[in-house]
Image 1: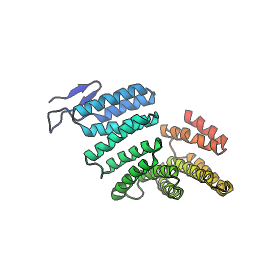
Image 2: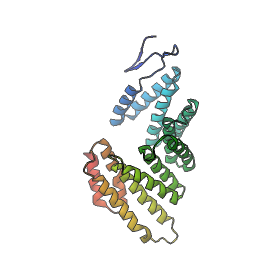
Image 3: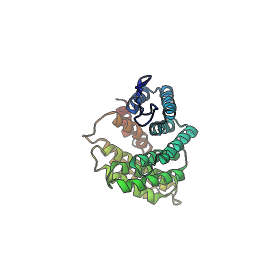
Image 4: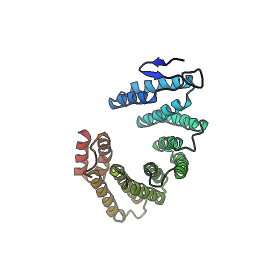
Length: 270
């Protein structure tokens, strides 16, 4: 069968069947990136939905899985709870049907499913998926792999929601230790330090003594450490740097570091 053209993309013939199954995911993702950069969310959603239908009709569950993985994160960012959870559950089902649940790729999809549940207040379901991810990572990756840092940071956030503060501290320490050893890992380490400060503040709010002095020194230490990491001279001031500056600015303001907040907001706009 010859190649079948669909819009700007090409569905290549499958060598094992008569259906035009393989889908050019790289081109689809490039088009999605353009829509996301321009904040053309309606166009991005139409594109994803179109190709999900094509993947289903073309009997291509792997392509559908990639699209569902993109879609649930997109819906999470738009705060569309019902839709995000629905597509997350579909992605998890596909991982199992494709027998990818013991692979790093499948485990990473589970991590993304977990972040959807975490975002919408179901920390218990999130932690279940995080633990599935952790088990597979431990079987397939080195202890200092960057993927572990992202996992531990997310697990810590869920643990805080569950008021499992000791577990959360352990996860943040692990994440920071890994990111400090990785080239250009300073940005993610800075995020972890600020999250760690938020953990200590949560502990203070849960402390019947309400003695902020037991936490204030450590909180200030972690906030300053995050600031120093964000000012590492070797860090490229690229799109991700601007994203992190924007993400972190509010945290500095919350803890009274208003000049840092102002500076980061300025950097985020450059």
